[in-house]
Image (cartoon, rainbow, N blue to C red; front, top):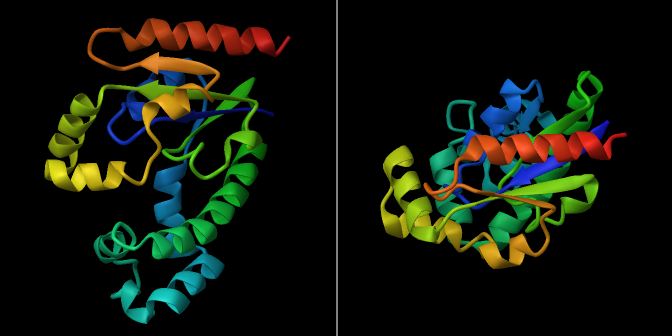
Length: 195
């Protein structure tokens, strides 16, 4: 199975780009969404999280995501621990998901493909970019967050320039370039690589 990663900073518009790929019949594995589910359903992962943060992190049996976010975004060590447990669980789940797909290629959408060293498991990586002020505005509207909260989350991600140098394809989602033609071009380029 040909595997393509699609990444970008918070608020870059990864999901919008993925929706276009889905209309082309390309299945998309949403790593962050699946990670949230796995933190409640994967026994090994749940045990690791409880062991480090205490059973109270699971309040009524489901993960208190607000509390966990509050901790990890102000404690780099805690964030590293969570990532070290979550990434392998998501990787196993993604590999299994791939076995169920029948398309020519699949996408995995994840925010920190480069930061977490996962780029090498993909045949190619797409980066969705947008200027910081647009990203902050999008996230503030979407999550009802303050700009300071969004910036704090951005601080845990690499700068765009660093990711641009590593990406195979770039989608500019800056309100000036239409997404659909960019996705169509990348889709055709990927298909041509499969022959």
